Amino acid sequence: MSSVAAASRLSVRSALKPVAGALAFDGRSTRSEVWSFWLLTAALSLVRVDVTSIPLLTVVYTLLCGFWSWLWIPLTVRRLHDQDLSGKLAWFLLIIPAGFALIWITAPHGADYTLAFDNGIVSLRRTAAWSPLAAVIVAIIAAGAVLQMIILMRPGTVGANRFGPDPRLVPARPDYTGMSLYERLHHSDKREAFDRAIARGDRSALTALLRELDMENVDWVVDAAMKR
Image (tube, rainbow, N blue to C red):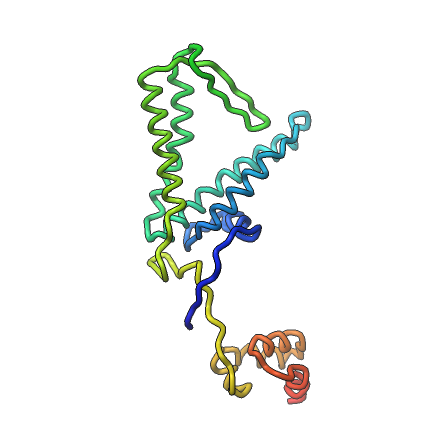
């Protein structure tokens, strides 16, 4: 079946795709999906709720934060797939948190800059002094952030690749002009669904199927089919 290009745009539906695909490491994702999810993440990060006084909510909030961070991993894998690249390259995501952790552990105490971590529950802060090692780590973190942005924002391959069909394409709607009902059923492979709907006496399923086939006088066709 032929396909046509679908408009890629920011939307709530695109932003929620990473949530639905939390465990999906196959297939492909578009740049609009990344931007939509990033904007949703930024908006949610503005909501600050003090849950530290309620232990259960603290646990739930911590789990949600961990889950939300996790979503970037399969999303990045699918974005790599969209460019016909191996999902194993997603390991570069660890550069940034690993770099910050390394600075926290190795940076000597001083007053040159402040290291801080605050997720609404855990708040850590300490001052540190610049060192050659810290400068190298910061450079690596910056390079990792730039690399991550480049990979996430690079255009995907046009058409199908080894990881699946192009997510920017949707199947073209068949042209049933001049076809009889049975020709349409054969052309669309809907004959079995048609027979099952009749056998069950399911008028709503039959009506939906006929509308999908662009039939005219749907109600009349449904009545006639049910009398078979």
